[in-house]
Length: 208
Image (tube, rainbow, N blue to C red; front, top):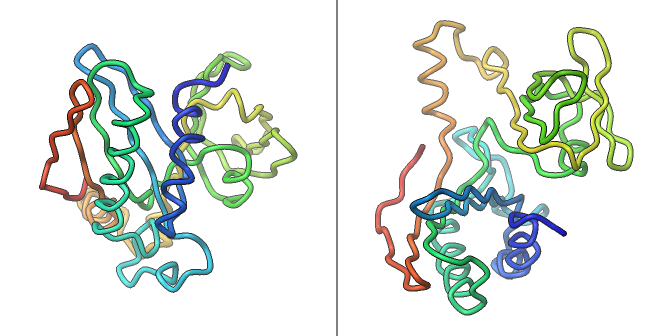
């Protein structure tokens, strides 16, 4: 049986695509006070808005208006479909420089990049690893860990994010410069909070 994040992705992807955007993936984070449902969106390839972001940020072409539009449509759909029991907060965001990766296809798109990965089940005594994506074959991802190959099944990957190459981005290696770089590459996002399917919109939307 598919997990909640996968179920929500299958349910909401058509709604996001209808807005000319791509649903990269969803994080579903349950908590005692209510779940967090975080959607990552990007502009669909081949659209004018998908050209290079002048500020060099992740999520090329994604604006706060895109995030708010997706938040409105998705919130309305969730109210009708009611796939989440209890309270939840909906967050819609561009992927940012340290973009998350969902599924083997996205790993293949970023072959050669350094990534930080968390595994669902331990493998060779590891639950976390940081390595470079070497290759992707079907649902198998091979990483380079300090010169040694490490093969993982895509369905055993819980979370994965690209590790930004701050030097390549023209940022100095000092901690102050790194912090500044993270602010420059901030995601754009919009938030909604839902309680018993009654949505309370948060008009504020800012960068992480």
